[in-house]
Every structure is written in C-alpha cells, then in structure tokens.
Length: 246
Length: 291
Ligand code: HEM
Image 1: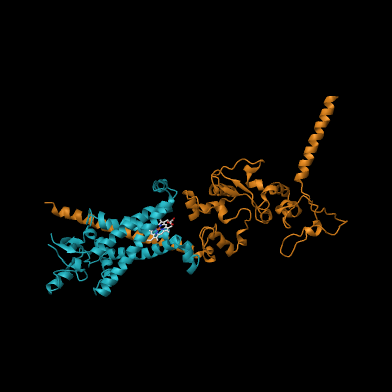
Image 2: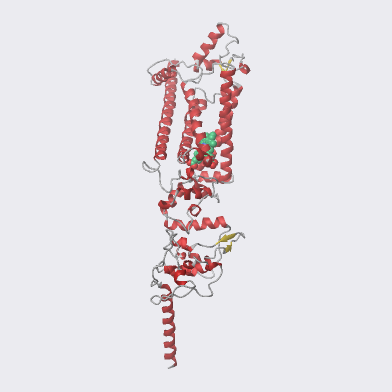
C-alpha cells in the first residue's frame, strides 16, 4: 500500500499535546461549571477536592499554552527559516466555492464531490476554531488565574467578562470536538474506525486521492516535472521527505 | 393569715421583678442631645467629666470613680451607655454584651485551640445597617450567660457558621453568591473561599451604596493580596448583569451563547447532511449492484 506523508513529527507531537491537555482541561473544567450535578461532585471528590481539580486544570492549561507557543515557533521556523510555503491552512476563495459545492452535493444537486486540496474547509475551520478558541479561552483563563496582575493593566470588568467567555467558550469547544471533530476523525463512515494520519503521519494514497485529490494532483504533477523528492508535498519537512512511501 | 402575708409578699416580689425588668428594658430617653465634636465623636466629658461646670437645670452625674482602666477611655462611654444616643428599646441590651465584648482583646478559644477575637466596636456597629438589631438577633446561641461553648472547629469554620446566619434574611444575595465563583468553591468544600462576612464585616457593614471603591478593594485584598480598585471595579455585586448593569458582561454572555448555538448548529447540520448523503449513495449503490 502506498502512503503519503501528511504530518511531520512536530505536527503529530503538537496534536498529542493539544488533545491530551484539552481532555484534561475539559474534564477538570466542566465539573466546575456544572457543579450542581452529582457526577461533577463525585468526580471532584474522587480527585481529592476542588483544589486538586484546579491544580490539574492549571497544569494542563500550561501544557496547552506551551503547545501553542511550540506551534507558533514551529511555523516561524518553517516559513521564515526553512522558507517553506506552509500556508495550507489559510482560507482561500476556493474554500467558499467548496462549501457551496459540498452543499449542492449533500442535497443531491450534483454528482461530483468537491475536490479538496491538502486541507478541506472543515479541516481549516477546525484549525482556526482552535486557534481563536485558544486565544479566547487561554486569555480569559489567564485572567481568571491572575486577576490582580491582569487588572493592574486592564480595567476590572475584564474579570467577569473573562469568566463568561471562558465558561461559555469551553462548552462550545467541547461541543465542537465531540459532535463535529470526533465525527470527522472517527465516526464518519468514510474514515471509521479512525483516521490515523495525525498519529502515524501518513495516509494511504487511495484515501488521499479520495479526500484530497487536488493535493495529490499537485504533488504528483510536481514529481512529474522532476521535483526534488518523488511526490513530496511542497511544504513537508525533511523528516518526512520520503514522500510517497511504498 | 400566714398565707395572706406570704401571698402579699409574693405579689410584692413579683411586682418588683416585673418593675425592674420593664424598667431596665425601657431606655432612659430623657438624656438631652449629646454635643458632637466636628469629627463626629461625642463629647461626654463636657457634662460628665471632671471639672465640668455644674448644671442645675440638667444635673449630670460625674463619671464614677470605679470607671478606670483601658475599657473606660475618653471616647468609650457610648460603648455601654448606648441608650444615651440611641433611644431604641434594644439599646439597653447592647450594654449587657458590651460589658465584656467591648474589651478589644477579648478572645474565645475554639475546639482546635485557635483563638477567636470576640470584641465588637459597638459604636461602629450602631452606625452600621444592622445597628437596630440586638446582638442576640443574630447570635441566638449566645443568649444565655455564661454562653454555650462554641461548636466550630477553628476560626475559618466559625466564619462559615456565622455566614449561615446571613442567609436567613439575605435570600437574594445568597442566591447570587451561590452562583458566583466564591460560592461555588465554598460549596465544593474549599474552606478558605470567601463567604459573606469576609467582605461584609458583620459589625460594621454599610449599605452597598455607601461602599467606596477603596473599601471594596481592601475587601478583595484580604485574600487577593495586592488587589487594586481596578480589580474591585469588576465586582458585579449581588446583581445579575443586565443592559444597565455591567452591559459588557451582559452582551458578552449573549454573544457567546449566540456564537455557540450558531457554530454548533451549523457543524451538526454539516455532519448530518454528510451522513445522509453517504447513506443515500450507499443505498443507490446497493440498488445498482443488485442483478
Ligand atoms: C489553555 C488555557 C486555559 C487556562 C489558562 C485556563 C484557566 C482556568 C482557570 C484559572 C479557571 C478558574 C478555576 C481555577 O482557578 O482553576 C478555569 C475554569 C474553567 N475552565 Fe479553564 N483554562 C484553560 C483552558 C480550558 C479549556 C480548553 C477548557 C475546556 C475545554 C476549559 C474549561 C474550563 C471550565 C468549564 C471552567 C469553569 C468555568 C465555570 O465555573 O463556569 N478551560 N480555567
């Protein structure tokens, strides 16, 4: 089976850090928000009380913030130092066309699926939702963690606003992950039982052809023009420059 | 005959007891207005102090010779002689408590061995919003003298126990407190979480409107060291945000609820449409595959 390199080691590590810190943050945050529920109380008691739950939340928060910093530094290195055009996640007019195409396809108005590039609009949405979500949830979380320091610079009203933002954005984030992200990564019959690419870094060529035909077309064309490594996506890193592996 | 004498005697005793009880409970309202100094303290010494000019029309007794020691400082008179300025029938009852609790370093020992200061600045108390209540309105369990032993384990537990008293009257504030971060933490067993009396010094509490920002900041700072007026200005008080009260918080809430509903709604619709299309394709393929 031929495979295509899809995520490099950094991206995979970043995803694991994000996923694991997110799960810890969700399970230690939500019982605080829904503290009247018996499950929440049982869970908090099992962890040794609210203080331990908060400690876990704060430790995981720093893992997540570290992960964000890691990602930003990684992007800087990729784009500025290695001079790769790693802009696959940037939204383009094509995404808008793809959305309308998808809708027509869902509704049976066309027989062809939209042909996505390396990242489909849903993947881009996931990425940017996390990006802005963390800006909001991390920023507000830091305000809740350091209210005195934060209000030394900003007006006091940021604290109750941060509280609302943090608490509500958390529900949005968890809802999105459970209902949408987990669907596309695991439950969708198109990938069931799961899409392993974010863990292995590779995706079978057949799958890539089906889900990201434009992408595959792009690098096979590159290769036919005598690109450096057979089929390597233009913005992949050295570690995965094997490209299409047998 | 003997019976009659005994009955008359008993009646006389009963009458005496009744008279003295009523007499004690009825304040001596007849005190003329007390001269106030510019700083708001009362000038008792001008009539009762040593060397005060004799006043034939309103004879004033001089401070008795046994009134010596720190408890009897120049401006402390009103701590016990409350009824002089406060003609409420309850005023007399303060005096009983003040006899011990005006003593600023009086402490009680709790079960854990921790000492609890049980002194009250009664003059401040009288000008607080609670000033019209007798001490035992809240401190019911302390009605008997000597008092029942305190049940709280330590100081913090005592504070929490006392705060329970506030909830008897302040229902609205209690409800909003329970919604708050402090209330949630307290309910989940964090003993140091702020409770009523941590912010509202019970014996000096003022109407919220009379609280300066600096007072509020000082309250915050008892736990959040370094808290400034800026932090205090973000305190919602015991009111829900609304278009007129902390509109930023109110609209932020609306914004996030809307954002969540729209984003999750669209996401779920997308998932469902995708699933339907998949099921439809599959059904069609099956039909085509059939011979
Ligand atoms: C990455 C940065 C984050 C930081 C710095 C952060 C920090 C905080 C802090 C300081 C609190 C107050 C409780 C405490 O003192 O521990 C809190 C509460 C909470 N956090 Fe986070 N957090 C972060 C991420 C998250 C994430 C990703 C979620 C959910 C998926 C989440 C969900 C919650 C919830 C639900 C609460 C309780 C809010 C309420 O009581 O309504 N947090 N967070």
